[in-house]
Amino acid sequence: MITSLILASVLSMSPANIYEFKMDNIDGKPVELTKFKGQVLVVVNVASKCGLTPQYEGLEAMYKKYKDKGLSVLGFPANEFGGQEPGTNAEIKEFCTGKYNVTFPMFSKIVVKGEGIHPLYKWLLDQTEDKADIEWNFAKFVVGRDGKVIARFHPKTAPNDPAFVAVVDKALASK
Image (cartoon, rainbow, N blue to C red; front, side, top):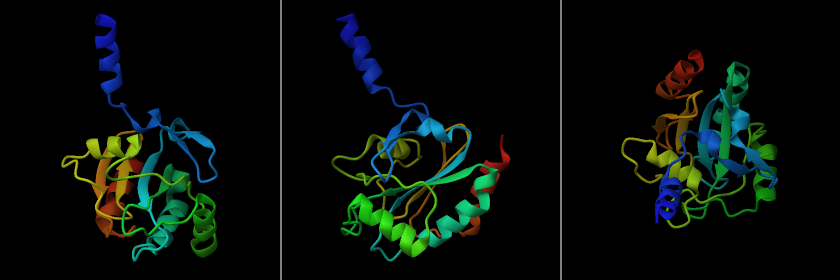
């Protein structure tokens, strides 16, 4: 009885930070997110056939500008919104690198809303005040160097939006 209570308690515990997750990269190889420990992360669900897809350009520009200061952008393709990411991981990779010259880490397609939501996105949502579902493609989470969510931004918030950049700058300034 006590053993089952302990097991139930352990299973219901939410990860303390993003570093407790292991994800498959766009090539299907497992990546321990501890690889990004101590960095500021912008976690974003992406899609290739969305009106917001040009945000790839701004996300890549932000990554190039700040990566030497400790920023990583992590792209997670998802197909929950209007079927706007129908491709395979290989097709998504070809699109991102070919059209937008994406060099930031891209991961395998996952579910970010509804039935089958990936535990990473469930955790991200649980870390926000309103805990509301992802609204659309290109929702952004800023994760601090401690691996905890600092802020969430609406999909229409451009990567060069002053409020978004200010949160990233402040996170990068903290040690």
